[in-house]
Image (cartoon, rainbow, N blue to C red; front, side, top):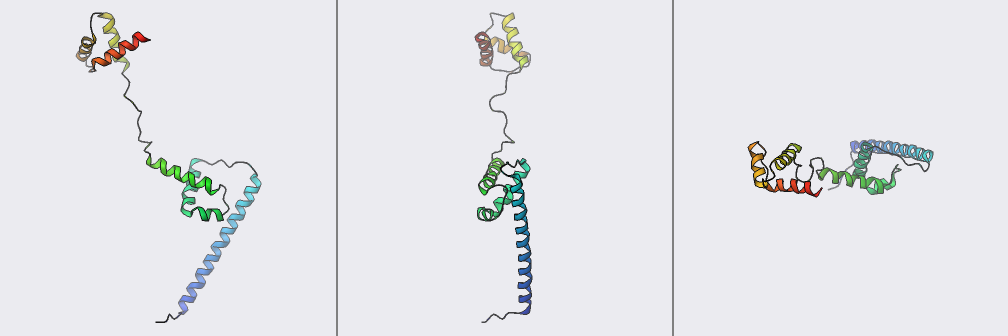
Length: 155
């Protein structure tokens, strides 16, 4: 079966060719603009905000290294593509949901109560102080009482 070229195919090819040529001219103009600005800057570094880096990283990653090497860019592909890797890594490290590590600190009210009970009742042990704290609504372990009193004696 032989393919016969229809007039609509010829018109379509011409329109696509014109659109491609127009896009190529726009790209060349943008490259020339960037080259002029880079020459004007000289050796000065271009400082970008985080949002500007995000835009460049996302668009640069979509284009790929080969295309970035062909284009005139403010930053090299070796600068732009690591930004994208950092953005992806930051997205999945859940650092925004991370809480403070470790156990919560003992409230100062409880520490003050432990010290007051120990000072007023020198014969009481850790269990007795813990029970007295439980009576006033602070449920902690006897080892916590021991840690507070030992930290006081060490200081």
